[in-house]
Length: 390
Image (cartoon, rainbow, N blue to C red; front, side, top):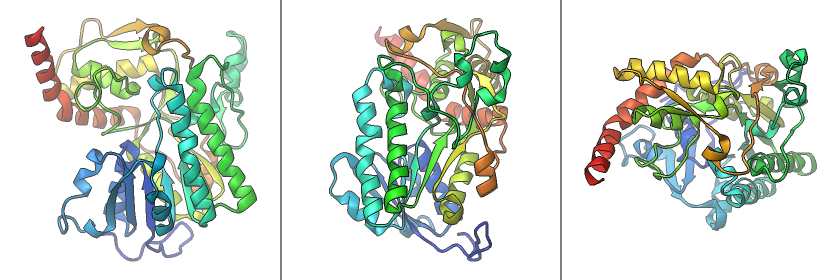
């Protein structure tokens, strides 16, 4: 249990609060619940449809010192009359619920828009009407494409950070055309951000918006056919992990030329805890949470993951470690992409003093060690069963 004399960034004692966490059973929620239980005195009302990733925190009474500080409520926020009551019981609501897998954006655009905008509306409304603070999880996708991506390919300005570094309070949100349904997610997320901001301006809602830039680590997404649907396409880290576990070449969409930055989930959760416990510094702000030092192309990420996996698994590298596939073949018609996603860190650094610590190599080693330990045997078994029946 954390010691009593915990203070915020301004030296004030931190009072225990009750947090209503929507989407607590997901990747980010599970890590945040762990942090809150092991390092703070706060209570969590954990809301989700599934609780597999937080089962270890929900053991029977007295199994943990925090048994009385976390309660799981199995509900879908779409149509559940209990939602407002739970928000009223808490001091702070954190909304993590979303469809956030690129493979869904242009194959399930309606679900994507409903999940990220329509289903989030009651949460914002109940927080505003009941004077409850809201931390809403958005996405770095709201920035869309960089200004630099519209410059001629040979323009030296493409190398100028002013044309590609993404700033919360300055950068425009640039999306592709309407038939590129990949932007259904970013557009829904941007509109809920605008609604929350408007609730703050017109009705005094206390809010913080988080824009994650590729948070990765243990428990992210699923491995198709093991703890998720066989035909499912998770995000890039889990896709590549699945290929490595199955000893298949990594599929590089459109040659893996997109550039991304990656931040370790445990570093990112530190930032969220600072937002929770420093409302005076976090309210009214939108925060980029990423690691601009961990920038690679998707191709480089694949090559790095291959090297790390050889180290953690002891298995030799494939002769052909990667293959190129077109985005249409991989994601279907209507796919589009953003070229670069590099966060400006000025605001979060100034308000909360937060900086990420973990290098890309270290976070991949930690994550792939977990993936190998958790899934390698199950994948081998699934492969041998499949070959026995074929």
